[in-house]
Every structure is written in C-alpha cells, then in structure tokens.
Image 1 (cartoon, rainbow, N blue to C red):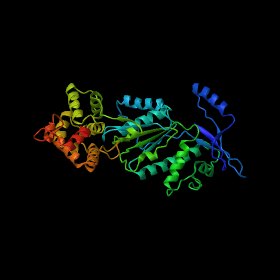
Image 2: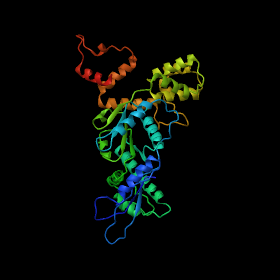
Image 3: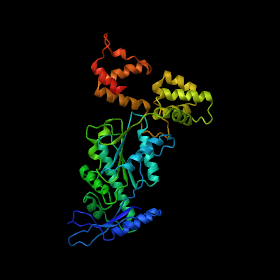
Image 4: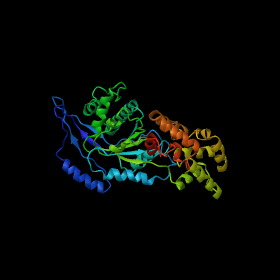
Length: 396
C-alpha cells in the first residue's frame, strides 16, 4: 500500500521531508526492484501548543468505476498502447493529458474503461478516478465523490488505530467540512472540494493517479480549469476535436473489418459461422460504419430475436431505427445510449452550430454514402459556394 505519514504545522507552508528520506528512497528503490513495495515518510508538524499528531495519507485507492469491465471488448491494443507510450515518455512538466476523440458510438468510453481496468490491475496506477464531464455540476459532483472516497481510504489505511478526521481535514484544507463520521457535507463549496482534491493530487510522491474525464463534449464552461496541473495523469474522452492545443489527441476511427466482423459474430452467439454468415456479417458491419456501439446493438438484436444474419440485413434496411434502438434487458454497458440516440445527439450539436452543415449531412444521408457528386452544391459555372467549401472540408 502506498502510504505517507504526515503531521501538521499550522505555521509552516511547506512540506519538509524527514531526515531519513534519502535512506528510505534508496531502500525503496532496492525493494521495488525486488518486487516489494514500500513508501517514503514525510512529516508536517502541527504547531502551537498542540501535541504532534500523525495521520496517514494513503495513495492506494480502491478502483470504483461506474461501469463493469466489458468482456466483449475487442481489438484496440494499438490505441491502448499509444496512451501508455505518451504517458511514459512525457517529459514537459505538469500532468500529461491524452484525449480520445471521435464520433458518438466509436468506442471512446470503452477504451477508457479497458485502460483503467487493465492498468490498475497491472499496478500502473495507484488510484484511478472517473469524472462525469457532461456539465460543470456533474464534474463538481464527481469531485465530491472522489474526495469522499479518498477520505474513506485514509480511514481504512489507519486501521486498527482510530482515524483522526479533523487532522486529515486540516491537512487537505477542508477542515469543518467533514463530520465526526468522516462524511463530507453535500452543501460544501465546490471550489473548496476542488482545492482539497488538488492538494491531495500534489502531495509528495503521489504521482501515480489517473483522472478520466468522460464525455467532455461541452467546452463552453472551460473544462480544462478542472485539470490538475501536476502530479499524475489525465485521460479525456470527447466528441470534440479541440483538445489538440492542450493534449495529445487521438481521433478514433471504427474497428477494422476483421475485428468488427468477429465482434458481431460473437455477440450474435454464432460459434461456428458458415462462410455465408461471415460474409453477411461483414456486410452488416460495413453498413454500420464499423462503429462498436452499432455493432453491439446488431449482435444483441440478432441473438435476442433469434434471427439469421441475412434476415437482420433485410430488417435493418426496412426498419433501421427499431433495429438500432432496442437495448438488451441485461448486460448493457453504454448507459441509456443507443446508436440512434448517439447519432441524434451528434447531429443535434451540428445543427445547433451550423444549420447549413446539418442540411448537407441530411442530403448525403438521403443519397447514401457512395459517389455523391460535389457538383450538387455548385453553380452552373462550376464554382462552389465558399460557405459550402468551408463546411465540406470539415464534414468530409
């Protein structure tokens, strides 16, 4: 368990390492090479006439994610390894930020989940926290839950000794917000909670935490002000492409054809598919744009309705919305999202920003996706509307 001992000094503003820190660090390095985890010790004295108190700041926090691990997760090894490579090679100071961007249903959240589960199990991180980033209120609510989780872990780390919530509150800057049972007031000032949380993030040696900001699609309130600037690592998922100025951005595409076909066959429970079924499955995933969410819908639909692949193709062509709106009764890992709702959300956002761009997309959808002549939007002299030219570059 990664733990630091702290005592507090009301007159001192800096954390000073104890005299044996150098020895401990050398010993820890040797023990870590041998596969034994130990941790350095720091002291902060509580000044005045109060006796010195000690409390433990535990850096090991149990994994508590909002979704279970997706046992149908497939492929994406390259994408997962790219996150590792960026984090391990980052040498610019501050907390590195990696943003996974792409259209709804392409698998951004599932990659973040798989990364969290596998890297926590491998001890790549000592703490991983999930932040719902849809609104400022959801971020602030997530921060409060994370702060509560950290305090609960501190109490467990001190067992069987009684835990001093007053001391931990003073150490993190939330004195008065924690009651005698260690509960944080739900009416706490969000800025105080954020400040306390950031204090924990930057404690000496606490540099193996990961924050996952999921669904950072609304950038109007400045989501980056909620990013700690040092200590650990930050992973973002978003439909928006604007993160490249502050993060390493990876724009996610659909699955490759083989992985997409195999996923559909697996979800449809076709253990020994015929060559015809494989070909039909490939045709289905092509229609679905190789998007994991849409493929998951299709596979679950085929299995639950107990229909052959070729019948699903006919069903899809005739009643697309119903085929892509049915959520399985159990085992669904995408909140209340369906392929239809995610596409509708994405389209609504485009429509809100640019009605003409939305109209272009609707027209293209009506004409299907192959060989649409750009001359449809040109004038008789062969010149394009300059507005369309700008939109075309962003859409296609």
